[in-house]
Image (cartoon, rainbow, N blue to C red; front, side, top):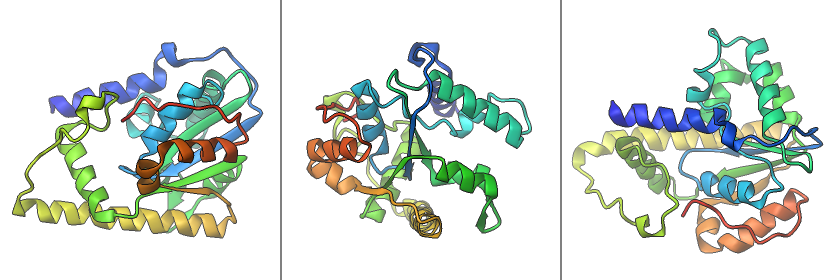
Length: 236
């Protein structure tokens, strides 16, 4: 319970922390990072934030953030919140970006097996999109289970790399399979939506980010039409 409360406090603070707010600016360009848990999207977002020209791309539709809003979550309330976020988190050059995991998107914009009209309007409002995934779905599932169990989702400290050396038990297998099923289902759901709406996202994989982080981040900046700055992520 303490870990869950700590995780919620950190997530909520990031969305509403005035220290992350930027001077009010008119939005001229929007980009969306469509992702899943444990795919390297936090590394991408931290690098884009550090560039100073790509807004403050966070999970603004995270359940912890939305829990701060008036209940129930009507379309009007979410729209007002989203409008306010854009006003506070847009770079001086007019760039706004955000990240949304599929489970966050589904909660707001999927009814049954179909994307709602408001969901379609949301997705098609962005000038550029990125689709971030992970080829090794088993590793993704194990990583998700461990992150939930330890409440350690990422770190900016190089010495923390490889420090989550927990022994897996036989009883972990059903849990891993649940995360694996969700990872595969969410990946295919994003692919179906992208195809149905004729979106043309840049495809980014966790494996390429690990293999060539500098070149992948340069490629992302180029896709977004941003200056070819050498940007460093806060996440390792």
